[in-house]
Image 1 (cartoon, rainbow, N blue to C red):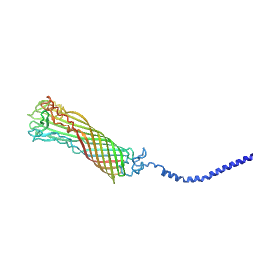
Image 2: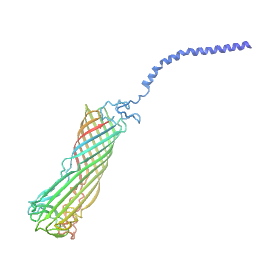
Image 3: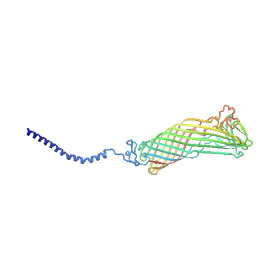
Image 4: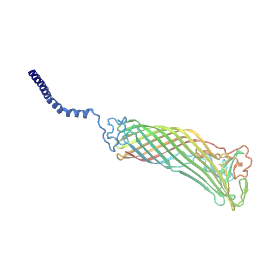
Length: 450
């Protein structure tokens, strides 16, 4: 029994030794595998793992994953080897100085005439028109525009851009003055609604009245817009994008006719239905103000090509919306006696109780705009450009269109008939005329892209 147990233990130890010997025999294979491991690791790191995001200058980490709108061949987040403006920038801003010309303000009504025996009435051979009867030309005026935007993703897939522009208030001033004796004759031509005949209200008349008249007008335009920007196509030397957003444009204009007359010895005049004798004076003011506020959506596209530092870009947009048109007409006549307290009553000559007040209209409008720029890339951050811009607004109210020369003398404060029964002629009636408007000009700007 004892010998059999010893034999069994010997056999067990021999088997254990054989197993250990076999394990020891495999050790060189493990060593060989370990020696080959660096090649395998390098192969995995260099070919099988996705590349890590590379830093750019300025560093702009990619928080939303791979860029779907990156340039062909670019790794997400890789430094751009193309010119700024190709969509790989994060932010851009520009400032522009503009010289603009707008469509002449309509003014078909003659406002001031001179003449002889006809007393300045239209249609007479000795009558000449001094002011009115043609458009109001505001000449060139200054404007400024600022634009800025940014890409939501550095590859330029989606972005947001805003722009604002404003013009200075461009004035227009015309005046005529007689001498102290009333020379030359100055008159304001009107049509008597009761007779249908041309007549005049005198500003100056030799030996009767001396006086002066001033016609003042002004115009100002401003607007703003916000657009989403999206890539259509892009390459190393060109890009094409579309825009969709909101736009607002505001046109503010006014026209005023101011008359001052002094009654000379021997003359006579009326005020508020009562005659008065010299000395004394009359002041008449007619004012026509219009405000046009356009609001609407717009869609457009723009493209740019650049080569060797030079670039050219073009933009086209069209908006559809509503123009809220506000017209305000006011008139005042004041009497200045030689002694005593001045007095005034509502109503002038062309702005009377029949057409005075504020009126509002909402009209459908279309607003296209085109722009073209050429410029030069100074360095990777800055570039300058010069260009042309044209903006059109299909429906506006303008002051000159609101003037109606047909008046009922029973409503005119300086008329001897003032305050009597007006009859059926409630004149002047509001015209509510509307027209279109355009502005065009050249622009000089500088742009920063980062």
